[in-house]
Amino acid sequence: MLSHHRKRRVAKRGVSAVLTVATVVALVSLMPTPATAEPSVPGDAAQQLAELNRQAEVLTERWHYARDQLSARRADLERAKADASAAEGAAERARVVQGQYRGQVDRLTNASFQGARLNQLSALLVSDSPQDFLDQMSALDMLAVDNKQALDRLTGAVAQTRHAEQSTSNAAARAAQAEHDAARLEGDLTRSRAEMDLQIQVVTKHLAELTRQERAVYLFGGNIHFPINLVGTGTAVQAARIALSKQGSAYVWGGDGPITFDCSGLVKWAFERAGMPGLPHSAEEQARMGRSVGRSDLQPGDLIALYSPISHIGIYVGDGLYVNAPQSGDVVKVVPVPWRQVTAMSRIG
Image 1: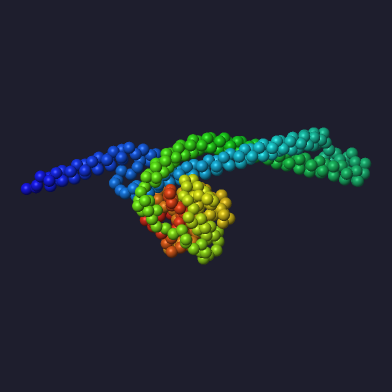
Image 2: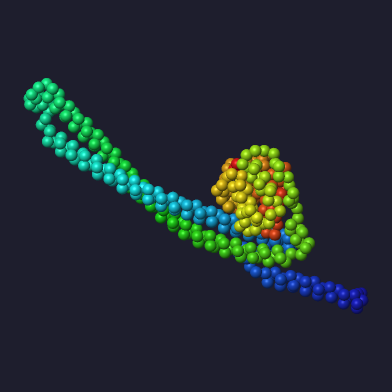
């Protein structure tokens, strides 16, 4: 039989447990709903925040992609407009040349008609001397040659005019399509940015609520003093060295250097400083560049992309390690490659 005091202690522990569960449920229900739902599977705060970070990274990379595509279509639009203007100018010049040759052909045709009866026999009959005959025959030959040349030039001018006019039409159509695409992408960019900002707010809130122990777990691992003097030559190795020079720099969503970075921003910044400008600021687009390589063929400077769809990327530095800008609240550092999450490896330099 349980004593009276022991029964009271057991009952008190049961009430405390119920209250603890109720408190957790209440806190979870009060959390704001992000653009992508927070994980419902129980886990510690550091693991949940890492998952929220990955969701935010997916949205950030989607925003980068939309922005890259918008920039590309705007550039296409400007090129199409310039091509249309140049083609219209060429068409106008071709029409002028066509008019000139057409007038020449008309004059020569009229002259040929007027001298049509002047054949070899009539030239001989009306000639006063052999030299006079030769002169008249020479004039006939010249008239025939000039007429053929003029006709050839006119034919060429007509073809050139048609080609220039078709080029003008094609360029105008390209410009119209590019303008339409740019308008659509602007809408995609706005939506992506709004979703990204909402998710970043959720991550920022959770990051601020971590205890010291939870933050230590969240930021655990990695090296911010990895040697920069990698062995090798070429643009990619130089990019890896440049990325390593930013160890300890803060992770910031959308950061592309030189002070703060996100994952694809670090790759873009490092390769551009190494002499390869124009990289997209999208992990997925970066991973598609160059050629695919296998794990056994990896060299310092190769790109390591994670997840499906690809939403994280870094630069291999050798020995199963890569330098990357990992997550919000963290810094650029060297960590072991998480091989199970790797979905692409490529070489672009």
